[in-house]
Amino acid sequence: MRNPLWSTAKHFVLLFYLLITLYPLIWVLNSSFKQNKEIIDSPWGLPHNFTISNYINAWTGSKVSTYFVNSLYISTLSAIATILLATATAYAITRMKFPKWSKVVSGVLLLALLIPAGSLLVPLYILLRQIHAYNTPFALILPYVTFGLPLTVFVVSAFLKSIPGELEEAGVMDGLSAFGLLGRIVLPLTMPTLVTVFILNFLSNWNEFIMANLFLAKEKLRTLPVGMVAFYDQLNMNYGGLCAAIMFSVVPVVLIYSILQNQIIEGVTAGSVKG
Image 1: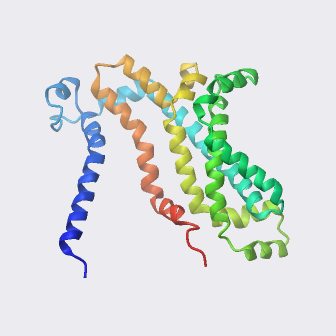
Image 2 (image 1 turned 30 degrees about the horizontal axis):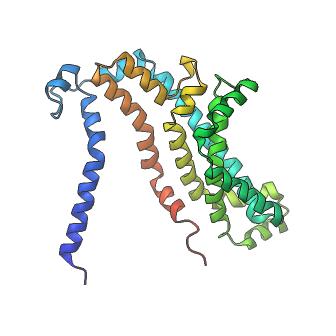
Image 3 (image 1 turned 30 degrees about the vertical axis):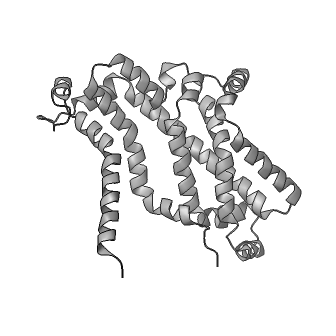
């Protein structure tokens, strides 16, 4: 029989950890509804008069809306492109019969995981200048896709190895081409895994700062992490507005996890059990 005291202690520890983890977010959310003076006078208390003026000012008056949209479409487009390329690569490695070259491709991808991204910033800057991609959205999309491919390929490959080959043989008998097998059989079966790697790539792109700061000099192209630094410089004494801007950067992540949490759990465990 399970020990009730031990079970209660474990739940208490988990609840304590949850509170510690969520407390900074709760504090920022609470402060985003306060005026500056109220935050300074009572940083831990609830707001006396809830106001959404901080959100309105941050969204319309400080270009947070522009930074938000830039981050959203660059992160989403990069994550989708990464998934499509990685799925096709993983399918070729695991299903197509060229054992020598599949090992070479796998070795190159593994080597790419070992190279620090920071060591490639100068060559990337020169390359983007030469192909006239600097100061365009592609200055981030191309590196994001490149750096996201290796891990995504390995995750998708691990799941593809658990899919019975008989399904594809039946598709071939029905006249499907390689692209037909990929689009009508492989992609639907790997959807939980694809959702998981989409989240991982989206969050990595959403929070990335160094390349966004180096490769996009135009203010109208800034992403949210870079814009937040400029926003802090402009409103370094407006703590309520700063907290509201932080919440804009947190909301998409929370929504994605809330909506896709079941798919994320399925994707993490997908391919772990065969038979």
